[in-house]
Image (cartoon, rainbow, N blue to C red):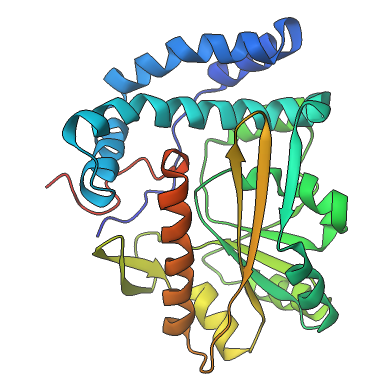
Length: 292
């Protein structure tokens, strides 16, 4: 099982071009340019292209031809989601519609007064969480747990364009100082959000079947929830047709609670999302060790 190296692909120049296109020519022109950009990635981002092909071919059991054709659609969907993020934050939110599916589970969770853990993944567009919570709740109750080591210049540039994320960020650190921030958030009845589908090298993991193969997952969020009896929701924000985003929130419910039981329930929920939205899975590396 391959660990994630902690760095995402992209350049500041690419983001600058798209911000320029959105602001000067509009969103549709940006989508049009994206049609050509995706061809570049199909042929020159070879490891990512292979990972997409094996997702469709081996995990979702598409035919060889269908798996190859869906590589392009996967890249194009990913590009649209990145453009949507910039467009919504730049004043074009009115072009989009948002659906709240299971938001009452968050309301019920918050009434318990113990905080909560939201488990998501690198699927869909959870970067839009602020806009969903602004509609129904104060987004300042949300703490996003970060392990992503994206290039700092990209983050700084996006912050200068769309503003710094209003959702609070807690970075997972080697000195474990993030534990104090997490405990403080839970004591204040706030929410901790983990993208629990990746693990970093040297981190403690559990091994569990996912899409037909054993895979490793970080122990941290599952242990935290089970040992402290913290309510858990599985949440995803998925793009649908016609500029529509669908927010899903589903509660973890079981007679017995343990880290592994929560993990299995999380993976069952994630498999359903992946099969329903196969082009919105963004782990562009050898996730299941299919390359060997």
